[in-house]
Image (cartoon, rainbow, N blue to C red):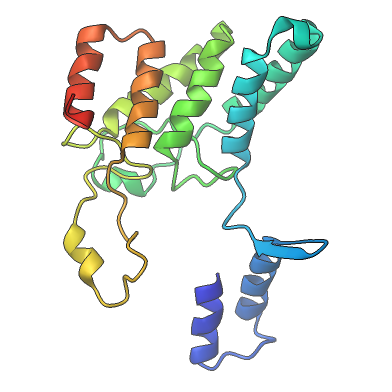
Length: 215
């Protein structure tokens, strides 16, 4: 959004232009002011935060509080998460995976065109850990989508597959070194952990680990 404002200014758009106003409002929503500090959040992450909090609730020791209360919190969180699974929208990932059914979750609410493999693995793990059979259709979709998003080299990236065109990072304006979305160890590990939790056998997982981590 900050880049958008600079671009708008460069092409001569006035501050009262609706596009400039919308971009400024989007930035203002991410600004945090507290006492003697201020910072800008890069984005909001309700799906990611809720899924991690749900794992914490599910792992909580029984002696730390009423079990029924924790189970109710986890159930409500999982119901909310399940409702956000992207099932009907084919996003940009389908350029390389055109025959794959949608089944992921986004980082931010309902960002249908950009589901996140990382978030999908963590959300699906939480749904599975509840043991609630009503989540099985969502888990099947998530499993299918994660497996389908595996890159040819064996790893998983956050949003895409086989996105390793490193030549693009040598363009003059690609100064942040993060132009691509290549497979990474942390995303791949979460996918493997999810598949293990879903019951994939050791032979299959060993093959994945050999491809991803070279072990």
